[in-house]
Length: 119
Image 1 (tube, helix red, strand yellow):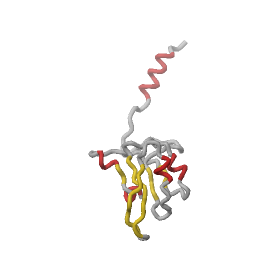
Image 2 (cartoon, rainbow, N blue to C red):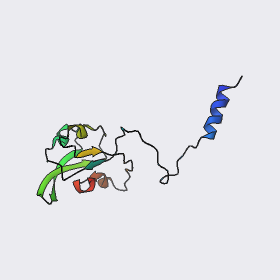
Image 3 (cartoon, helix red, strand yellow):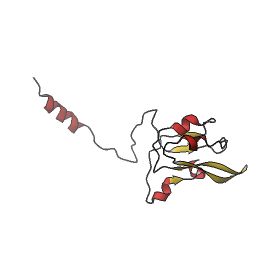
Image 4 (cartoon, rainbow, N blue to C red):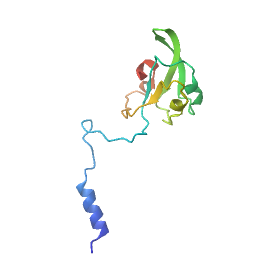
């Protein structure tokens, strides 16, 4: 009869605890919610994403495009819940959450992403 605690310890010691990041990246599930991506060409400037956001992390700011100055979403990733309500309410599906997990910054202000940075 084997000892369950001993078997668990053997399995734990056999497995690798860390990944060699960035060469090896962790596999993510299909429904993972990461950093936002915005397609400014299909955005109709409806501001539905800013209205639905529970933390008010999305504000509409003016941005220069080939169609002229328009209002586009600016997202404060520091306060974002990654709840994907903005993605659900977008009528043109121009705002989507990606699988990008690399959310590092030396300055808190760099976590506020302007529309041009979300493309």
